[in-house]
Length: 129
Image (cartoon, rainbow, N blue to C red):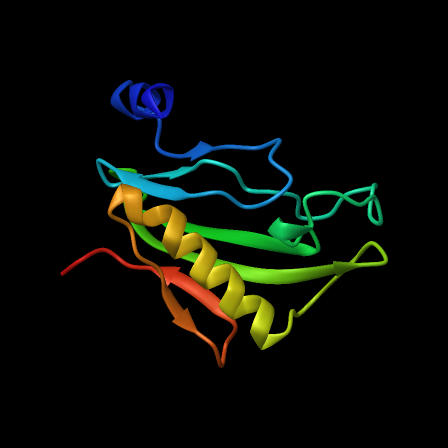
């Protein structure tokens, strides 16, 4: 966390964490997104068991909109996906709800809360007015 903050303080606009096999917490620090762990969007080890509590079949596409002049985060949309047979499909509403609850629980420590659009099956962050 301290390293991610130092990167933002040094002028980085987005910190994209990787190598986690499941999605981890998000933070907005100084109007810049920190994605601590983006998980796997698709991988070549489907079917290997372990860490089932994290629902490794769930993936997330991160759609980040920044102000082109300032680098400030304007909008962040997360699109959950279900990995099966090396393809991405729309997840069940139950999986979307689970992911929403899990991420909001982890993001609470950073003062970040996502909104759920169950109809569109997306999670969103918007800056406070």
